[in-house]
Length: 110
Image (cartoon, rainbow, N blue to C red; front, side, top):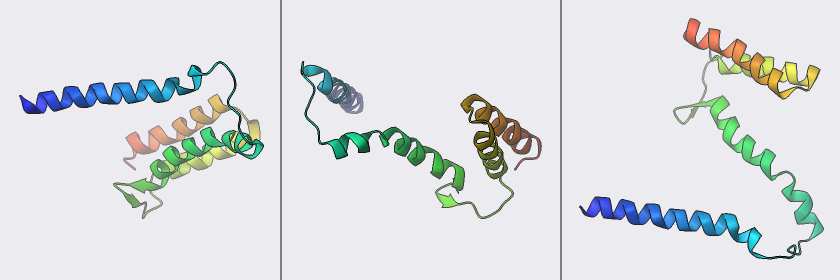
C-alpha cells in the first residue's frame, strides 16, 4: 500500500514540476531581457541536445564503446552522412541510414 502511495505522490509531483517549468515562459506578457550572447547560444541548444542523445547510441553498446567494426550502425551512419552532404535532405538521410542498417542488423545479425 505504501509503495502505491509513493508512486502516486511522485507522479503528481513530477506532473506539477513539468507544468510549472514548461509554462514558466508563458507567464509574462513581455519578452524576458536576455544578453545577445545567450540568445545566440540558445540557437544551438536543440542541436546539442540531439547530439547528446544520438552520439552515445551510435558509438556505445551496454555502456561501453563499440569494440568491433562489425556493427550495423557504423555503415548506416557513413551512408547517411554521405547522403546528407550530397543532397541535404533529412528524409532521404533517414531512409538511406535505415536501408543500410536493417539488412545488416536483421539479415546478418550485426
